[in-house]
Image 1 (cartoon, rainbow, N blue to C red):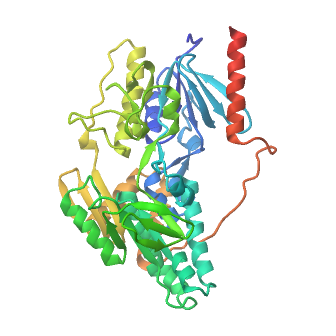
Image 2 (tube, rainbow, N blue to C red):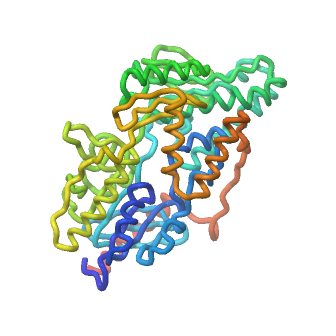
Image 3 (cartoon, one colour):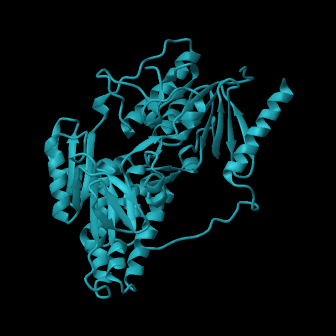
Length: 456
């Protein structure tokens, strides 16, 4: 495509990969269009704290336009990408109130990942995911409503199902969610509902199909995490998977049935469905295979970074779906685009471990495990402090950092969770009731095809 002025770069996704690319391109002699379905950047590692009434939704999100303030050559478009056409070098976006077809010279896709239910429709129907801000608020509403209902329920079996919470997945998200749910019950709900619910027992059960938790971690930290969870009162079930799910129960692979109305699914993620729009064979978890330069194989003008990109390291292992990887890939992809424009050779991706502070997971107040710089193994209070500091540093916005810090200090000393609000609403149409998103997407693609026929 021939541009009239500066080269045009379209970036899909305002996560860590996309924003790092934007920051690198903002001062270059290019025009940048950033597209995202939301108008905010989300700090996903703290979603579970919103779901368990620890933080307000606005404390882990930051407006995209606020981030882009002062970047004169960067524009933002809020909308849902419904088509990527590599041959025409266009991206079609449904904004909710109209359709836009945006051309590009270079495309950078950093749309992240989504919850993966491994094709099990029954689980997808009843389980709660934890990948978006809406997910976390929906789960918070559900948990609080379960206890409100249990307070007026006479049937002990129904009451047990309402106050039992099952978390599936032994990764950091699963552990953090299970620990936070147990603390919510132990320090808050048990005191507020205990006088009204006879024999109240807010069970939290963590299920992991492997025989250990936290697969990427050393054995010592895996065992430390399990001990800390069980010390809190979380029931840990290893070596079992979910065989069936109903409205009020979960059945495990060994035949065990757990009465519950709350199933939190933290067992896996896959790449954004936008990967399928690129028309290339996908790899594990629906990720897009890319060259070391982060270019899509077969489409040199398209770059994919972060959770969507499949690239193997020197050991033949795919780079993990982690924030530090997404950040470094976003920066490199932007640099490689600028090198191409300057007629310089591109550079391959090489993960800089020195910029990666390691991996860690918090389990509860003063409980955590951390593999700092992939060398130092710590657990307990020291690991918990390291986790707090790292997340405060990574969180965008001084106001958000301050609010989160104050909330954490308040919760630590008062054992309170102040955000126990059930907020449900039906979104009002932006202009007038219209067709659903799939219907609009079908109309959009038909319109775009008609344009192409006319142009021919």
